[in-house]
Image (cartoon, rainbow, N blue to C red; front, side, top):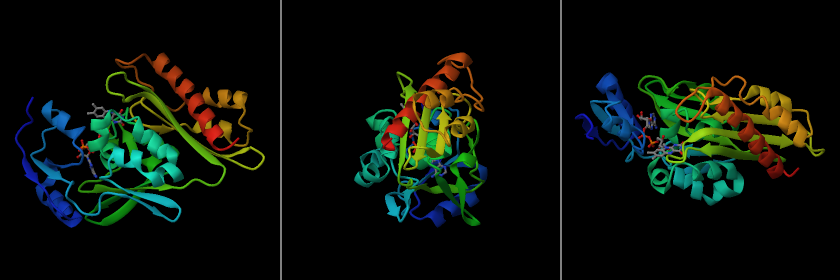
Length: 289
Ligand SMILES: Cc1cc2nc3c(=O)[nH]c(=O)nc-3n(C[C@H](O)[C@H](O)[C@H](O)COP(=O)(O)OP(=O)(O)OC[C@H]3O[C@@H](n4cnc5c(N)ncnc54)[C@H](O)[C@@H]3O)c2cc1C
């Protein structure tokens, strides 16, 4: 399988990238790790006339801890996040999510920005970024702007990224004291994509009452979504098994659950509830309850 012919560009600065995107109009696509775009090009599901490679662009990679938030460059690979000692010590759920993406080859090449821009409905990062209240930073001809992760995913492989913009950074706030987070998924046995994945983050006060809950689901529908019913059912409660079970029952509410080759609507809704329960239970344990 060969892709259709295209011209290749390897700019070194973001301004050059934005200049190229402005000049090349609608026929250009940026290339990050290539682990979603290149297969699509080989299948001729995408036929860009111009490929603007981001790999040599300075300032798009790396993980920085700026005060109370991580700033992760769009071109940072899944492996860099999985293996970062700072991530593991300050926000281990990020390393946990990265570690269950695909296989080592995918994790070595695939990027955080590429995953969020591509918005595959079965990708892992979308649920994590929504549950962790991340902000996505884009840069375009009018400068930079930030979009909350729960406003980013608009539909099947559709995001809030605007024309001629690129995703440059993801900001993930550090959780308050008394917090715990976990990501649990039912992986497709071949690709490891999430048939259903749930990320849960909870904050407990000193008496063990939940003061904040943030839960998101990926895989089940056309886009990752916040499980608002679950969140509302957790806040104000002591998160013992019965309370978690009752909240997890709401995990498929508000998700446009789709039947596909992996399972029926009923089966995938069931997985939402099962993996919500597991993720919340683990998050509560990690919060120190
Ligand atoms: C065998 C296999 C298994 C996989 N398993 C999983 C899995 O279990 N879980 C999972 O989450 N993912 C999985 N993936 C997907 C993988 O994580 C990809 O790396 C990811 O989806 C896309 O990232 P990329 O850097 O490769 O982007 P690319 O393929 O280079 O680009 C993808 C799309 O995003 C756009 N884009 C890329 N970067 C930017 C940017 N900075 N700004 C604007 N647009 C941008 C491109 O133009 C393109 O349209 C798998 C992939 C393969 C091939």
